[in-house]
Length: 441
Image (cartoon, rainbow, N blue to C red):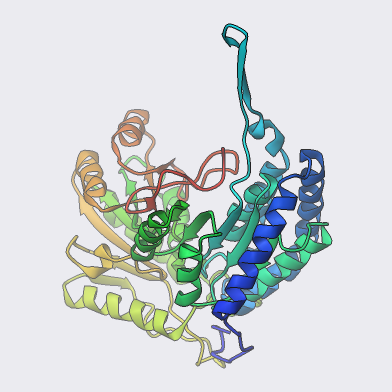
């Protein structure tokens, strides 16, 4: 439990024999499940959706106990997962084939979609319900079997998902959870009977997953890390911008690939913005996620806390100003928890680790530029391209930003532009490897 530092359970990791057994079961199940009618498949999906909706509180409690995010955040991620289940319930429309009459004399041609077979999902600690639900409902609705390899840091919620799939009537072997470390990941990436890989995690591992799995003939979507910027123009509604930036930077303790970790203040926007974000950062209630009114919990591990403190210290040593310093924060009575308070840095430069690295903690770095064009160039020079935002009341500048910035998901006065389930989530550059975006068509 990251809020207390106390060990709550022990997790047994899979052996190679466990992995081989899981893949064999998935392969056998996929051959049967793929022949189920669409009506029978979607009946299971509808039932699964109802079961997840009725277990939101139980799932959220498991997430909070092992990840540390507050209960409202945990419930929010389950809500986003439900959107994808609902989208998968309507998969029939997307699985229709095509037909050409009289393509040649007396010859008609038709194409149809078939299941891939066995799909493995390798998911991160920060969204132990939502990210698996980005993957498995669509894979299963399309007739595949799915093996989930969740993070070993918060493994309990995925186990409840497995139970709910069974209660929904999914045949044995179609959805399995396989706990493990690097050996298990490598086994899935190279196993001849695993046909596709879906991954969300850091950029170095995403590149490794993509290269290894494609070398073994698999279809791959691999989502990597991010360094998401928000540009704030002087004509923005500063209260609105500060509200959104605080939520986007400090929500879920910053442990989101769509967190805003860099604010690019244009011209005279910086001082006003800093004052307003500071007020909001200092008002955030940091506490164990089950405490009423808690806004933010701890980071996931002691190592994560140490890394955040190191990067913040390096920025201060390099000349950044600590407007809000969360390094010494603790919760009375829970001093062994992995606490970091909201942290606001001004005067950050592009050569500081606070800018070059994905911190994955509650830290907002502020950079100052003179023009929106300079801000766009700054973002485009960054190797990541997951999400970005602009805060402005100028339609012309919003359009210039939208068309000029090389990032996959863009918000206009929207801080975390995560698409709804019937659009695709997908970054550019070092934030996505492979040509398949996650969820959506």
